[in-house]
Image 1 (tube, rainbow, N blue to C red):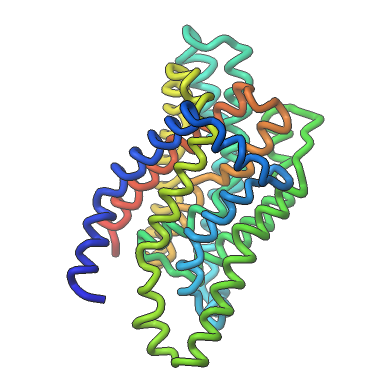
Image 2: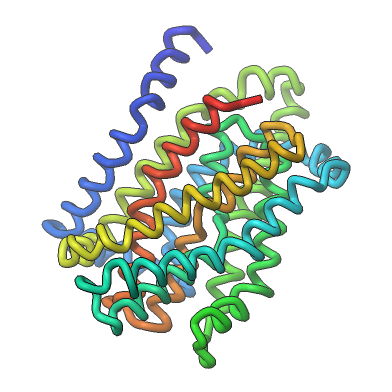
Length: 344
């Protein structure tokens, strides 16, 4: 790749936060002024999963999957500490700190602006976010922090397996909701669409290109053809998400700010717990960065789907999960910059 091209991409990524905010605004405006687009795309949905969004997520994470050498995945077990940090942070810490922080703000600090009934549903949405660690977007954060692609895949894949077992009991315990009916088809379809298919596509592409033109061509030329695709996929995905949620956001401007505060604090807290633990354990930065990102970010596709299924599309709980999407990307980009400045 030429220096000119490299410079263009790095300049684009340096201003990524501005591009992200612009795409959010575009999405909200499209949802408000041209609602027919969202209505049309909403027809293409299965098990509460948007197929157009799934395609854009493939665009985001396929380039990351190209970098995964399937043979290297087998070596992950030789350094399991990073996996332990991820599991402990995501399942023994994150859901409970989310519950505690959200309860403090919704029921105590913000009680003058939020009724107890609203606080209860906002808390439900926050807990749904806290009990679902990231599946798809973490591949973007891992790429931006130069994380180990093979290790990231294993970190995400094992979390997906734990979600299938632990998500419902944790939500039931924290919310005291005895009749939580999590859509199992949404869980399995999300794992299939957001991890299995792009991973298989990346592995098949690697094998085919390497066989035809050699490993050197694949590593030094072919992979770099997709350097900007992940970022473009991210921006298009954000436009789609905020086009779907535009009206909800416009109708609740003050409460969006109130909900955002505990969610942002939680994101920073969990990142520094995982990232700091990896540093104390003297794990490589390429493992530590994705470990921090997985815990800090959320599986918002699942959280939104469950909130809608349990409480309804226009419910306060669904709004809280939507705010999770609104705050996550700018905050995660800030954490990406922090991680890149504190490499070891």
